[in-house]
Image (cartoon, one colour):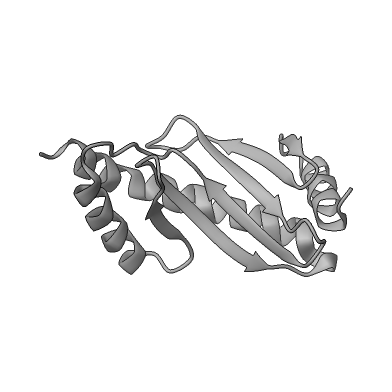
Length: 136
């Protein structure tokens, strides 16, 4: 098992945060927010054990047949929020993502902080995303 993933799970166990180990290098943490019932964050550690981590929240909202609106709202949100990136994937879903370098000694704290940041920003941005989706 990966050093960084193991350290992250140890830290979450210590803090009482529930998670699911999806694969050897992928941990899923789910929170709920004021605007979204479920905000699943996938924490993806580098397979080569480099100090790199990617956090993703997939399927925030689907924009099938309304991709232009999705691109406009992603652009607006990317301008507004500096810690995350919003983009449209190949299935026309908005994805929210963070890429970071982490330190082995503080990996758990850093990753959980990034998870919470991604959750808070995604939840805060969701009303704007939903308005863009349903505006025709």
